[in-house]
Length: 313
Image 1 (cartoon, rainbow, N blue to C red):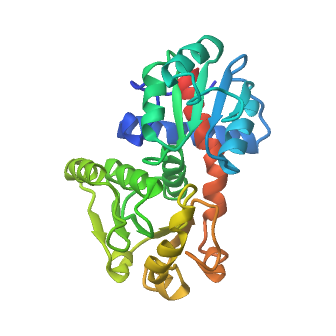
Image 2: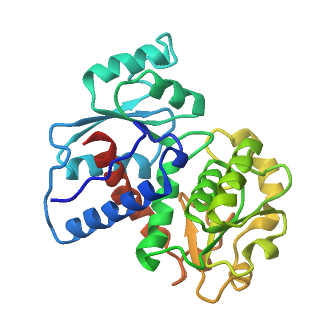
């Protein structure tokens, strides 16, 4: 029988809800659950449990990975689009949280405002998992670092360079890197850096863990000695009106073979998907033997299974 980690937090709204030790325990559980699945072993760690999945924003990977994860754990996942519930359309977030707490064993929410996820968690008696907000994407960041961990078994001499928007994914990666003692560099145009409060928190954590955090507009500086090169789309969902300006501002921040060649020789290529091929990354890079993009996508499910077991068991 697999040992389920114990964590202090009821919810996962940001990676900082977990300690470094708790994150490593979740990585170990993710590895065991992944191995069990590959061996064809059936488990039912969440038998009889129901996860409500609230989607203000559509997603391929988040819905499928959470839904299949609950099925494989013996539980049930209930899809709730913004058209299915009254959240934000007359019923308060607090009332929705209190009612859903009477029916469900856990909630995953993918929404625009991070404040919505916080209010939902504060008024729920059941665990709330952040499936993406405008501030953070903790499940993605944990899956990304698990992808590195399962290959290296530690984070020694790892440097993650992120080239692109200082968005929710970048902010979660930066915080996770700081917690795990991983060096992290972000290269983006001026005006697109992560939020000040997140940067200050990352530097505070890094001062204790030994992680080196670099924020710059200089791509060459960011990718120097990088063991992992990461990017994301330039225009996220909800930013369509800014698309023209953003594409112009980020034009020099495309991941190409020339930039990859400036990293460490065995540097791995990462992307949280969906990718806009030819825009933030070229085909010859994302399809190269150095790409671990599909491993990241697969590991979303394995890590989320570990998170679900940890918070809902």
